[in-house]
Amino acid sequence: MPDAAALLEVEGVVGGYGAADEILKGITVALAPARMAAIVGPNGAGKSTLLKAIAGILKPKAGSIRLQGRALTGLPPRSIAAQGVAFVPQEANIFASLTVRENLEMGGYLEPRAVVRERTEALMQRFPVLAEKRRRAARTLSGGQRQILAMAMALMVQPKLLLLDEPSAGLSPKAAEFLFDSIAAIHAEGTAILMVEQNALEALSIAEEGIVLVDGRVARTGQAQALAADPEVRRLFLGG
Ligand SMILES: Nc1ncnc2c1ncn2[C@@H]1O[C@H](COP(=O)(O)OP(=O)(O)OP(=O)(O)O)[C@@H](O)[C@H]1O
Image (tube, rainbow, N blue to C red):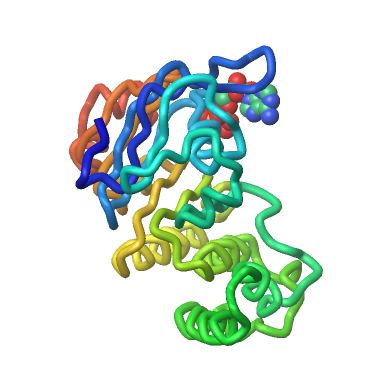
């Protein structure tokens, strides 16, 4: 049953790749508008696969996905994006040879020119590190700065839901901390976020809700801080 209060509803989603078509073994999760959930769990649990299913890159074999009560299931990625879902993949999420400003413009390439100009300026003000390097090729940015740029590109369309796949992967602890602060700030400004992270404790510390995925199933859900403090979750999934 569609839930009028939910932004995103994933119900009984089964899906995968080719012969391994049941990586996700029946996932049911929901997210309210402007909320943030961290998806954590062991390697290979299907965390990235779930984000791909929501973004439409992977077509579920069964189950349904709705945004504000409207079915997204089986729609192509461009239609899902047009409904307000922005996906930031883990890698290759910027154009290395384009400047920082050009990357932002590409993020909004379907929007009218005046809107692109206005949002590009606003995002550079929002992230001063991007303004400083606006004329530099994106390949000259540090790993953390690239992730900020990738998120800013996604924000060019003012999404209702931002999907982040392991944004802190490969970053130094200091760069990861800065990135998590930026993600928390984007969330505080009203964007709903679903974030997959290996850095489970940090992710749970900035999210409101936690979703623990194990072997293609939802093992636990709950308030993020409570999950992070739960001895069983810490022992099994967080290495604590
Ligand atoms: N393109 C693909 N084709 C075939 N199998 C894939 C593909 N991508 C992922 N898989 C497999 O699907 C399973 C789940 O992968 P997924 O990337 O969703 O896991 P994850 O929970 O995000 O963990 P990780 O942190 O290792 O990425 C793994 O067994 C993986 O090998």
